Length: 322
Image (cartoon, rainbow, N blue to C red; front, side, top):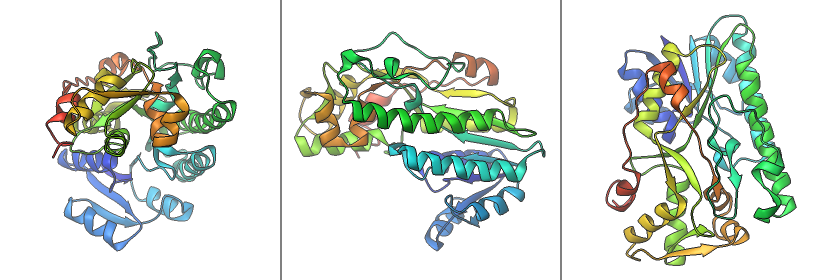
């Protein structure tokens, strides 16, 4: 199958593109520079000139393939309502190009759409693939969490834009639209939150967490997530929402592993929400959210069986330590 991967030079997209190529698919990667094109060729991926922010190039590329795996984001995981709206426009352009063709488009959303602030304590909510989104402010930022109103408004608007894109993909006419929601993705020294947490720890001398650090989030190794993308391309039905998680980890466990890795022992720093944002920006906010997800339906639907649960060992002794 001819497959276009947007974000193929990135952490998740790169892993997905390589995994798809290993399974015999003809994989193309969107490249907006000669440097990106060169890196794709080295990885065995055919570069296609284009930019995720340029609808014309997306439409042209979409017309040349049978499936699209979109992992790119203009705002990355630190997106705002504005940048996530730009992502939506990019997805819309590709959906319009393939409307009525029966082609496949997989949109990579994220676990933040399920995020709940709870003062550093775990929440009982574990969301499955059929969760009704977007979550209302009373759920994702209850009054007891003492989140500044301006941040509630900003986060709600950003997640609203993300969910709008999810729904347009799932309901696309004549397209096999699929939504992928990965948890905290780790492995090979990459990720979004983990390098940020390590930077925060090195700057502060100890790794931080919100409140007691009991906040929980689902996680998945990037190689097993790449396998899930392959299964989604090959088997997932139209309208499916998939959860890419293998287990759960607390923020304090992550922080303690980072502290040990940088030589600070088991010491961690308990901070308030505003302090997490002050020292970590959007990453500090992301780390403060409960993002509890079940992937049971995804595993049954596609026969996906993730087994990697070595996130703490990988931080302290593995790819992040080296």
